[in-house]
Image 1: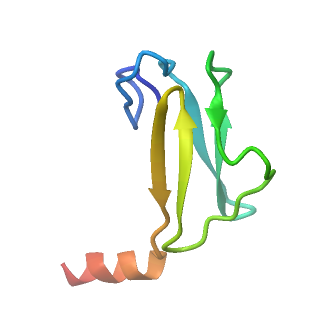
Image 2: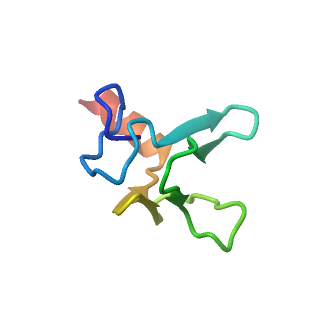
Image 3: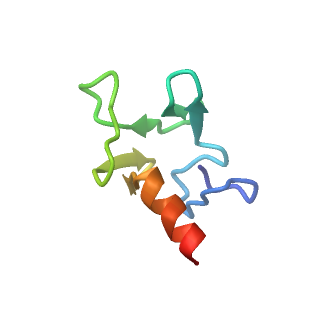
Length: 86
């Protein structure tokens, strides 16, 4: 995520770096990880907790620069069923 043209999730905010934050999937743990890319203003994700478990249909907020982005995890089985029905 960032304000650069090469970012998959583009945030048009001058306080966001061109490549601000990375979202990675760990196949061993079967979980996503959010990693700050040494950005000037940082990435804020519930700072009091080390690990945040994302549960289906639960929304979490992330502050990147001055922008706040909300994520909601969808249940994989339901998404696969919807795609196969289309």
